[in-house]
Image 1 (cartoon, rainbow, N blue to C red):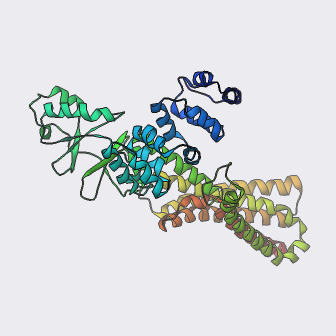
Image 2 (cartoon, one colour; image 1 turned 90 degrees about the vertical axis):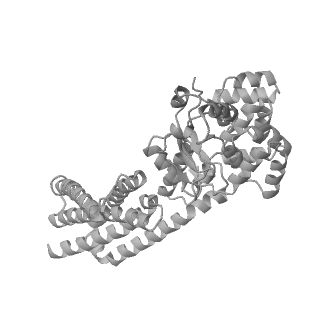
Image 3 (cartoon, rainbow, N blue to C red; image 1 turned 30 degrees about the horizontal axis):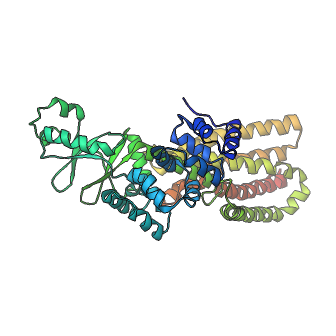
Length: 453
């Protein structure tokens, strides 16, 4: 059953913790998934979380530690002895989760934790993973997998499988390697069971296998696994040796993190922030784009001041400034969002930039005709503005929609070519520039039509 965290549940749990009722606390967490318990910890202070944590059985405690958000985990680990972390938790984690947990610690703490791990092979696997960048396939992969040699017989393979499977929660694939550890392919459990025990693995394995290199960016790993519907993918080094595997749960985390990063960038945040972060961290993330917006506003004010005389003579022009800036910003963000989405999903294919621009221009033309036509009808027949003002606003709106659409298409494509995250184009960057150019177009067209019509 899916767990739903409520305010009533947290209040009741806090009362039980305050009363030091261990049996009551265990009862409230009974049957919960480690991810649900980690969600509960987000609502507790350090001492309350520590009280609950020490009541968990060792295996569940290790899983909960892996599920905690990085900030909460770091805060929590500070109150636990190093030896407890090493022997009770790290020792029971998969190598990738263990590397994630201790990766943010100081070198001294890492060395101390590793020295308390009795399994030398596990400690060695964690050390190997710590050397990889966390945003690469090497940083995502786990060392735990089932691997057999192509020269073994099925009987030898079955014996080895039962030994290796003890340390693995889920077996998605059996990987086949040669004597040098080079990945050769995968082995179907069904084929292995149906084959004679004397059959050699080299005669029954499947040679075609999708893999990624250790230095492959995590975004590319996620794209490959999503495209080919893989639940796990092997990781190889530069010469093709099997180094580990990445499972779908790790890729889901990457997709979620990338979506959050793109959303924050589109919102004008320069770094990952949480509502619980300090004022300084939140200010540091928000201020750069606020300053850019401020500069854009000052430039817009300068553009308006250059047409002060026109606005003085035709004050009704000022009524439509919000309309022009809002429409330009909306159209620009819409166009940018479509391109960014296509770039993220690789659905743009091999279509040329010219073709994309032409399609976007056609759509902008239709939208511009409809919107400017409606404005023309409302201004001339319902509101009763002069024909010169009406035609000025309509032509300016049409021009701004066309410009914003082209601009919103070109900017993310340009950023993508420059290896800059195109999500930047869906935020204040496009909106600010569209405001400035839109105002310039509107006031220039307005000054022309009102002077000569």
